[in-house]
Length: 325
Ligand code: PEP
Ligand code: MG
Image 1 (cartoon, protein in one colour):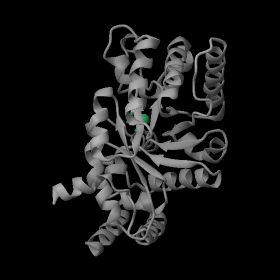
Image 2 (cartoon, rainbow, N blue to C red; image 1 turned 60 degrees about the vertical axis):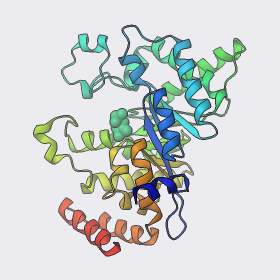
Image 3 (tube, protein in one colour; image 1 turned 120 degrees about the vertical axis):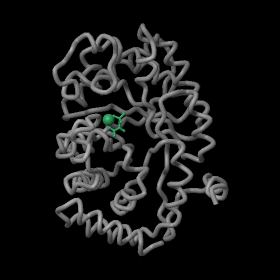
């Protein structure tokens, strides 16, 4: 049975009633690319670039980064690779950040905030990603965007870096899509406005749950409250998906919930365009999608959006899943 799931993993993830969902992978290292290709994933939906920085004493050079990103892009081509700019801080600390000793690092100088403060690091990475963009199908993703002005500031720097490369005669893809992680409640509430300024959304549920429910994602004392199917989370995701689609852009879910067979039918019922999950989860999740009826998911999602407690939602999902198998 396992073997037949693996054999079918290169088939598209299409539901019984003909809806196609892209299934991409989350990775952090060049060395993981063969596993992604082997898994049957449709691309890399989230390349977490921070690990190259965390693993070294000194920040990597532009050439180091460009070599790594170009190889990933070329190996995955023509499939897409979404490079997320540096998401350090909180659970992923650089040495200098450890020394800073912020009282609340998860609410501190993290991700895009760190990059806008340390623009030398940011510009180096943007140059490397832009240079790699000619070697495959590359997209760029900004993490932890909290508002329009922050996004515009990041885009402005990207534009300056593009002009710099043009002036130096260094090639880069002029049409590289630019997206944002929607993982803060503020971004959810202004998703309609943000959607007009980017090419795609990627919903980071790991952080969206942490910041919406006020639960430290790494704190075991409150882990019982870390509830992916909390009505507030389900409604937030729905708001983001609808805002994206109204603006004509695509939306992906790249947090852990996307590979949870219990949560996936609800995401599918909202008609997300793609998910990005660990490579080892790809064959099994593609198999589940191929056995699923989208109309059933839509009905489930409609009911779930009216529910007000986690236990009601859990019961609704269980009933749908048990009826099906
Ligand atoms: C997320 O927040 O859901 C996400 C995918 O990013 P990370 O886990 O790297 O913060
Ligand atoms: Mg995140």
